Length: 159
Image 1 (spheres, helix red, strand yellow):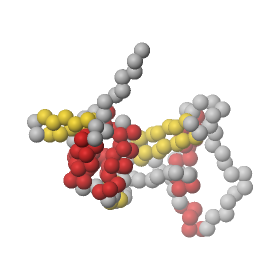
Image 2 (cartoon, one colour; image 1 turned 45 degrees about the vertical axis):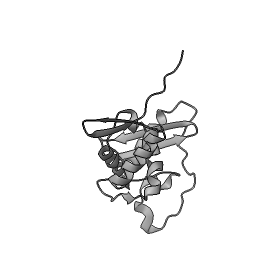
Image 3 (cartoon, helix red, strand yellow; image 1 turned 90 degrees about the horizontal axis):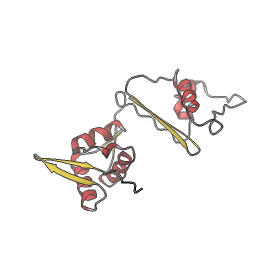
Image 4 (cartoon, one colour; image 1 turned 90 degrees about the vertical axis):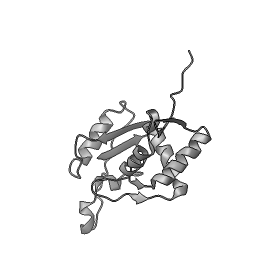
């Protein structure tokens, strides 16, 4: 699975590909197509007017490596990076902002999602972090049939 996030100014597009494959040859085309979906006159792809001389070894580098703040992780080809117990909460916050916890999730599902993002964490560390977040009312917790689920509640907008 490939995840491409393109942020231009205040506009942001994220593509989470489960149904198609992105390779180095199609990456530029995908980024160009994504910018076409941003509001007109707010985004454009800027190409260098003068060619940049690159060493012969780097001519095969991924197009994402040339972008600022681009992260590349393909779980089917790479091993996830182990995260320390004190980093788990910040990674869970990333899952929360990507709306992962909009539906109730178990610790196992959360560990699997972290792996999809390229992070490996022990289920015990994830469980402790989620339990602490629930006790601090940062996330909600529901237990039924010996299974605990963690989730966030959508904020209600008053009319």
